[in-house]
Length: 256
Image 1 (cartoon, one colour):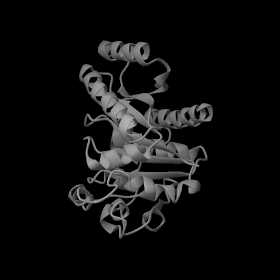
Image 2: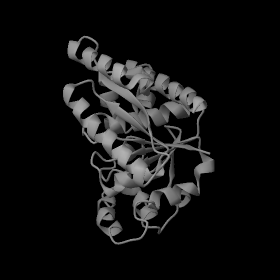
Image 3: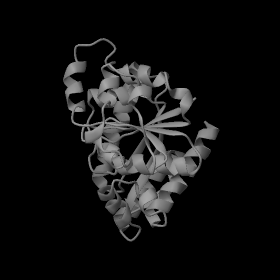
């Protein structure tokens, strides 16, 4: 059965989408079967996986409203090596439409249950707010991967996220836990980043992944070509780090 992980952080601009698509590509590279679900109406993870969101006939919107299954809606990203359940602006309307329906926070969980056996990993890219879409992702997942920059405000945002995960765990999804914290956009020359990194390790211990993603121009350039950095420039420092992270995830899952 697939391991299902949300990539979430309530703070915007911390590299959630970059982490989702590069981890998906990294896992595919090390031989894992991967489905990437884009739960953000901006559709950046879809476009960043080499899939044109404007051409999609069916999206995660149709899955949430139960007018299509995951198997009908997913598409293969040939260049990236994983399947994509894409999103576009239509998804913004799902927020309003789901308010009145039954089991509105479990729609994704039920849909994904039908195709779990097809994958080793299912990664969900969540929007940066605690919305009905994010809630669907959290109710569906076994755990949360938290990408974060080693900056002071990021620590404050992390406290909010931990509280949210505790609430979802208590009330909606007993399986949900923080799998780990991933330090991204890291520059070891900046003393503050090193200090925050040390604080994270002392407070969260082995919940902090060993892999550190460096600040890397090639990772930032890759989305403009519609590809994850791992595919766009496999030799770049950031791409190599994400493949290492994928390997660390596979090892960590074996111990779970």
